[in-house]
Length: 89
Image 1 (cartoon, rainbow, N blue to C red):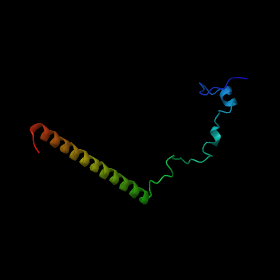
Image 2 (image 1 turned 180 degrees about the vertical axis):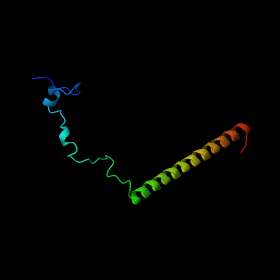
Image 3 (image 1 turned 135 degrees about the vertical axis):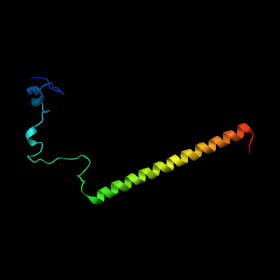
Image 4 (image 1 turned 135 degrees about the horizontal axis):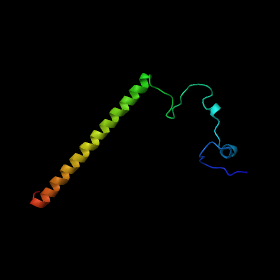
C-alpha cells in the first residue's frame, strides 16, 4: 500500500486512495450557484445596505471621538509640562 500524501504534486492514486480525494462532480450539485462564507448575498437588499452604511457612520463617529480625546490629552500634557518648566500655576 502506498503512503498517503497531504499535498499531492499531481493527481495520484495514492492521494485519492487514502480518503483525501475530492469528488469534483459533487461540488455544485450541477447548479451554477455561488456561495458566500459571509452569509447570503444581500447586494440588492436596501435594508442591508442601510445597516452597512449606518455601521460605517458609527465607525467614523467613534474615530472622531478617539482623535478628539487624544488631541485634548496631548494639549493637557503639554500645558502641565509647560507649567512645571516655566513655573506657572
